[in-house]
Length: 250
Image (tube, rainbow, N blue to C red):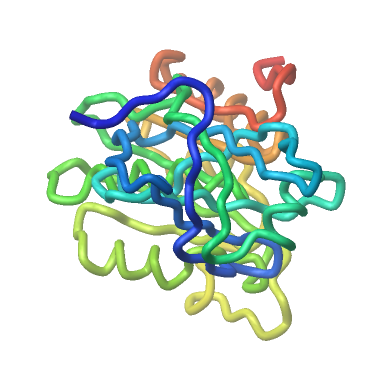
């Protein structure tokens, strides 16, 4: 049986990977060697970092970005200019260091179903979508994985996602660059240029899909309003806000 704890537990960072200019992935195992409970795709853990005075940083929540079948946790953190904890993690925490984490939490999770699955991630919002995509491996469920980002400098998980899609015929990838660089090639590095809008959604998304999305607030508001205008049922629209207190339905 998986080892479940209350509050925080020591994790050891056994690997650290730079995903793009701003995003770093941290691979975590329990420092005491205990088995970690499996997460439901879409869930997050709360993390805090030991400080020099023996205290801890404020806790911040980060989505688990890996296949839920793995025996480790991975969080992929965007270094935010105003984010003290993200800067602390990305700049100072290295392989072999100890940080603290909670058990997986959150209600934004992949539900069972066989309708077409549409996973849309904007920027760092790709993290729960990636975990959900992994959950469909070995199934017949049709998946549209849509990744909207600025350009190749911000292309987290590029090789990993390409490998996932290459090895699983049920997953179809669409990569959208909102601000491609001069060297970014349409048809090679990305599939569409610009921002997702209502017209693109009508032409490219299935009416009968089950939709999950995460990303910047205006990105999510556009998606919600577009799906609503398409006549998609509200119980098929699932999303997570990284900025609490916002309402994308208005």
